[in-house]
Structure formats: C-alpha cells, structure tokens
Length: 133
Image (cartoon, rainbow, N blue to C red; front, top):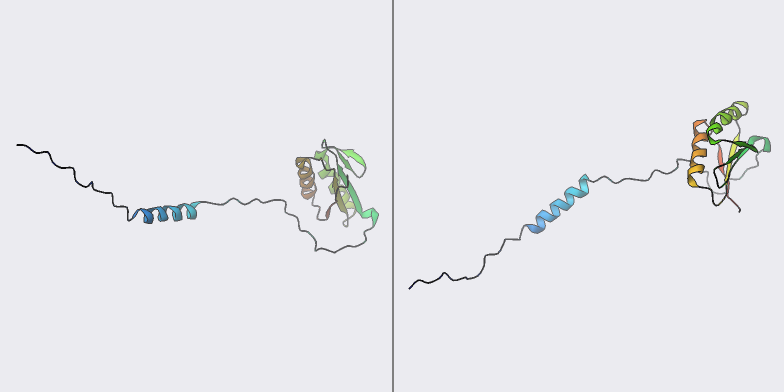
C-alpha cells in the first residue's frame, strides 16, 4: 500500500537576525536623512532692558497697513521704492533708525518684503515697533 508522506511540523523561517536587519535599516535611514531647519529672520536683537533716548530726527517711521500699503516717513510709498529711499536717508544721516510698525492684520508677506528692502539698502538699525491696535 502506498502511504502519503505525513505533514509533520512545518519548517519555520529563522527570524533571529530580523531584529538586526531592522536595526541596521533604522540606523541607515537616520544617518542619511537630512533635517531641514527653519532659518527665520536674521536680526540681532539687543539685550532686554537696553533703553536709550533717541533724537526724533534720527527716526524714520515705516508703517504697513493690512493691504500692504506703506507710509515711509509719513508719505505713501510702494514697497519697491523703499530701498532707494532708505539709501538716501542713510547717506544723509548714518545714525538713522527705521521704525517698522504694522497693524495686527498686516500680512507677514508685506512685513518681510519691507524688512528685505531695508536690509538691501544697508540699514543696520531697525526697530520693530509693537502694534497697539
């Protein structure tokens, strides 16, 4: 009589090195992955409590409204013209301070565009005023 081979215990896959492989893959991906860091605005802020009186003639007010309109020294100015006007102010007075004031609803985009224009003009003294409204 012909007998069928018995189905005995099934052979198991050797999983003793699975954890080693998983660990090596984890280390590989951690080492090869780059982490992107947010750069933000590169401004050097003074230490807390440093207050000093400034001559009003050395301050240029830059006001930005909700729609991106800018008043540069109390005159309506397009954002693209701020660099040129800032250079003129700096050439006339090296101690000039630009005071940037926004409203609470001013879009961040307009604020950054104005700061970029001031930085491109070579402004080193920029005051970021606190919006009250």
